[in-house]
Length: 242
Ligand SMILES: [Zn+2]
Image (tube, rainbow, N blue to C red; front, top):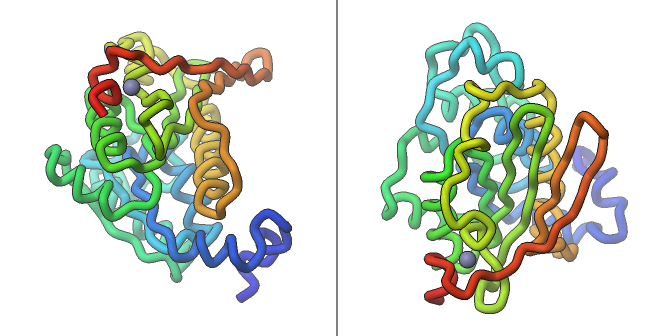
């Protein structure tokens, strides 16, 4: 099949890497600006199954940056509308809609089904909950956030014994990062982060080494990426006990 032939042409991917991508399942937490971009590329790149998790409905104020939705989707569940659009992008991807606020048990079940978890949600309570589940099940977490002209991206795991987790980076919620509504965001900045998250996820799934435990900070105003090491916290409430 010719869809992914340019990707297969890369020596680091090849038929073997593409087969690994095609037999993988990715759990996408949050189908906002970040999740829309990640999901679009993971679907087009041939990931076997996407689990699409978002309890929210499409609001008109989302349309400026959440590129899977249009005016006809306003008021409908993001998980359902995203699945419909992604099926049109690549009919071969298996799409599972999870339009719920997940309990810890339901989240653990979703993480258990996934080879990799991408978290582009918009609040710390969910990020901490997702981090708990990925650490306890030893999954790779690709985490991203965007606000104003700034974005951040980090890859964690799958081994958390000697390496940091997301909670090592943020011991407590940082409310200045929590809301696009109060802070504003330039429309494509979440797309840059979501796209970079898809790059990291595809590297992991294809068996290409991805750098973990580093915080990558994107500043759209100065067009600059910076990289900062994340220290493992001995007293981390999540990975310290593993
Ligand atoms: Zn930790």
